[in-house]
Image: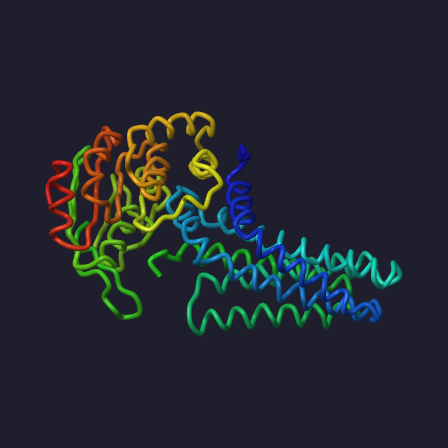
Length: 198
Length: 182
């Protein structure tokens, strides 16, 4: 395996280590889609956005400590700028939720029929889950009350996107982009100040 | 390090540390306990910023230029578990990518270093080989075992070696093993 960039090295290694959890989340997404087989497109869109957001928060929280501890120490001891590391780490839960939501929509397409699948809800659910997981990443470099606040903030972002989805689809996409961008900036800043002695 | 301290939430985790290490020299530094030893090692490698006092690695202050410090220092943690990588080669390729080194060359260099670390447990040998592929001018070791001392000195060549230990006894044993002052 030859890594072409720092981003690919960090993202691939973390995704590889998280492989089992991504598969479990994808399987759960598929099961959730199967349970929703009698629902309409609106219910699928809501279910996908909310399940994807939950999965995003879970996969984001798995980026710190535990089996990631050794990778954290490697990344922290390498001569890298925090914003680059933040971008690479942000890719990991995003890849995870895209895989999970792909499983969700494939099962929806098979179980409920193609009329319950449309491009806009598919892409919006993925954009929503990615934005939420990036905001949730900010919680991984904080502890105690602030960690809880960032998880709550991620949940609020998901709720706002779901509320915007039907009346204002472009606004929902725009909000995903803004939340993801601000979340990534915040995460990069926090990662630069974070110390692994925690 | 001059009066370097580390605090977390009002609690002083590392009391004032005064350490000076010249280029190419070795120093085994005794700390009050294992936690302090781990934090002092991270402070020396630029991973953790001192709460008080001053730390300079070369001419760089880790609080202002952490990236420059990390280019100079190689850090080997006490509790790394690199065997979770599918192979030693993949671990080295990963590290080489992070340090911006040519990956194939780094694997060859790492295999050569690893050959010199025969008999050392892979949980220490792999991160040490990984740290040395970047040819750091300062090698920071968090609580290394004294029995590994002579081999560490052999493979490190001209780099300065700074090791932290959880007690005076451990520091003295490591210092004796690799002819370093305490």
